[in-house]
Image (cartoon, rainbow, N blue to C red; front, side, top):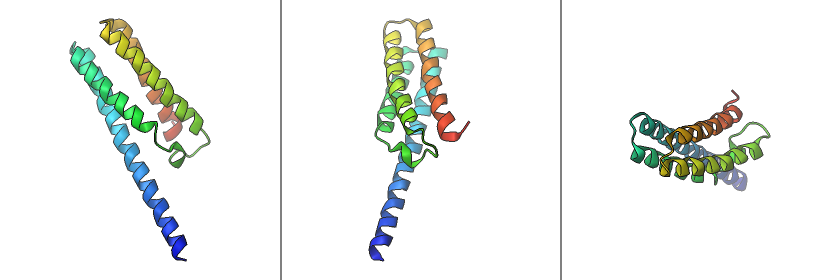
Length: 126
């Protein structure tokens, strides 16, 4: 009986920790995307780069999250692919920004945002 209770408690704790990580990570992604957007609107390369750093860090955290614990469908592989795709899109965005190709950078930003929406479609059932 004690083992069962301990196992349930451990599972609940792990699920709560995972959920907390996901919420914190999504807030970081939101913050970073907003900062990138603000950088474009205010012509601030520094804001774009700082936002990129934030989103890249959050994306790397999300790569280590067990997505099966919060996705209510069998699309965990899709979510992982989205995470990888986002990493590639972020690299392309950084490259365009560093080359001061802002029209191209906005297109790359749209691709990153599309990855966000694709993931939310799965997770939130949009």
